[in-house]
Length: 300
Image (cartoon, rainbow, N blue to C red; front, side):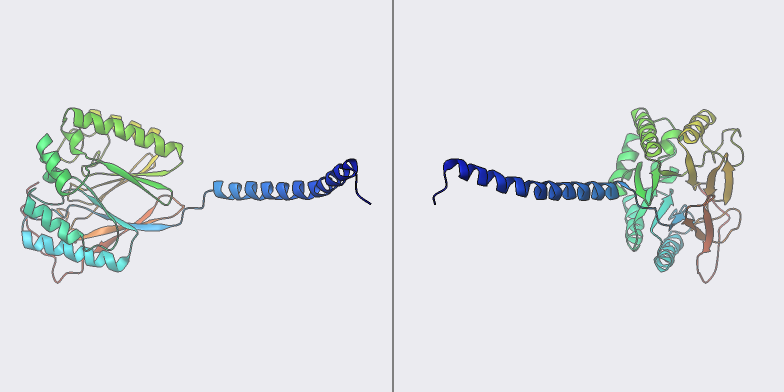
């Protein structure tokens, strides 16, 4: 018997009503799955322990150009054997900034099998940097201040020459960038490492101005800024002496060089081991050389 229009309408509605609970159930299941996946994505993974190398003052050309270049190359070989996550070099890449010296430094550095991040030193930019010396460094080596992240840490590479000698807008630009970078890292809950060339101080925070520290007024400003944003580690070079200090929980390390150590430490570099516990552990790695010759003459 043919169905009336009314019967057909009731049949269609019955089918829809039968399917509706199944569709609702499927939709709810998909929504719950999406919420669970979103929740998993929002939970940050735990940072893993890692290691990195701190090198100081390769300073190719300081006393014996060929010898310092050879020691830097040897350091590259040893670092490749250690297989750290990356390397930071705390300035004075060369003794005299020139196309030849920067090219030789870059060629040796290219042998590293891990990323390498350089900070500029006074020998790379001049005791009183100029716009020309800054441009030459940036064209030859790269940026003089920048940051990168690794395993929940932010490493902030700074140009200490822009604090040692005021260079107008260039110094002001770095200061503004540094404040923004520190604030952003602190908001994210990152562990903060600052890497430069000249240490804030060599012995005490209030020591007089000298060759081996930053000007007192700027030093106080930076220490307050670093404390406010929870900086954990300050790495530097420049002094050609091994200095391990603590300033209100901030680890401050100026490490051995591959050019000349005035405290008669062997040539080498520092291997840092970063885990959850502080203070972070670091160890001296001596260069494996036939002899540890040194010169008594130092031009810095």
